[in-house]
Amino acid sequence: MLSSTWNFIKRHKRKFIFAGVFVGGVYLLGKYAQRKIQEMQEREAAEYITQARRQFHFESNQRTCNMTVLSMLPTLREAIIHHLNSESITALLKTKPANKLEIWEDLKIISFTRSIVAVYSTCMLVVLLRVQLNIIGGYLYLDNSVTKNGTAPLAPPDVQQQYLSSIQHLLGEGLIELITVVKKAVLEVLGPVSLKQSLSLQELEQQLTQIRQLVEEGCASSKHKSLSWYMMPDEENTLASQACGLTENDVTTIKLLNETRDMLESPDFTTVLRTCLSRGFIRFLDNMSEFFRPPQGDSNPSSTPDQLSHVSLPLAKIIPIINGQIHSICSEIPSHFAQVRTFICIDSF
Image 1 (cartoon, rainbow, N blue to C red):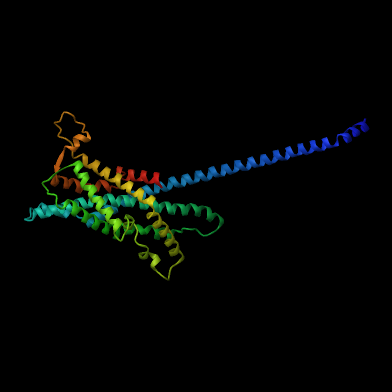
Image 2: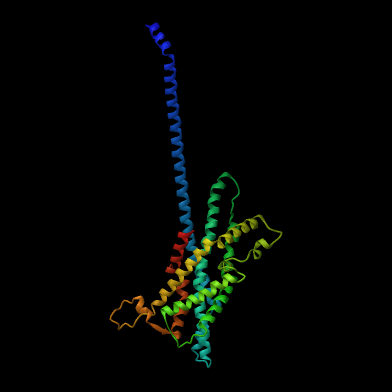
């Protein structure tokens, strides 16, 4: 029995060897496939966890952006009111001075200037803070991974504070320069318009469009080159101008500022900013439209755009309305102005 079995195996030796190799290969291939599937599952799980962590970090950073913007709007509003103080002019008008007409002309220019500056500066504040906080957020995310290996953080707290303090340019020199440019444009467009002249909402929009063109086209042809100058000073005016005595934190801050400057000068950022400005001025005109309603005696209480276009107000009556818009534009209470720009920035960056 054993000999016959052995003879059978010897006669079919090649078949048994082939079958053994085949079965072994299938077994090894199955083990290899199993290991690869397990590695793939572990990699997918790790990617999912990383993605979830990034999503949480991003959402947390956006909430921080929103709260920071709202907290800084009162400071921006006070800075604009300080440089364009129309309240002192209105108080002077109440005394019935002899040069009343001249004072009204000053009030016209200041009122339009500060509301237009409020729209520009609020948009700039929103987009600039979002860029800065997202850059910081990216470094903090990397720090959370890097510091686990015992290395130094990429963006220590001192660097963050020094970097974020650059926002003061927008609230200081940048704002003053923006006021100068906008005031010049307002004077050129609205200076010849009589206080008694009536303007419809559509005509008011045309006036604002002309002012915007002067401001933005003037920026393109001036030494500042773009609206980004109002948000961040030229490179030679920053820490980079210091040839010596720079600490390691200063060097890191310069790197962050250069990254921010590159972002502000990019075509994508310009598109986002202009979109925010367009939506901001649309919201501004929507607020103004509330005062261009037809008389309540009309048969149709709901006003259509065509009806609004036929309602006109003397410029002297529009001035107080324009003058008070800054409190709506730069309100620390969540409003349509901040929400619209926030949604645009989130969708764009």
